[in-house]
Length: 93
Figure: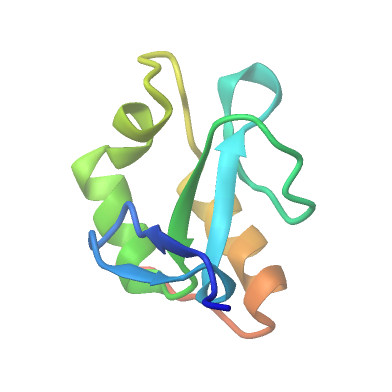
């Protein structure tokens, strides 16, 4: 059986679901890393800083969630991805 494949909203490449982190819209229309995979509309992102930075620059989250009211805190997303990955996710600020 093959592993599920998802597309990264940062770089657009397809990868195995296990190699990506799922993000969703949380309380207050804020984008958060969905560690528990709680269901609903989600987007997938490679766990490195490069794809996160590309997604932020391209404003990919609003398009992926089909909502114009989503907000994100880049520093908070980096921190949440650090917890998921287990190492520092450094941005290009």
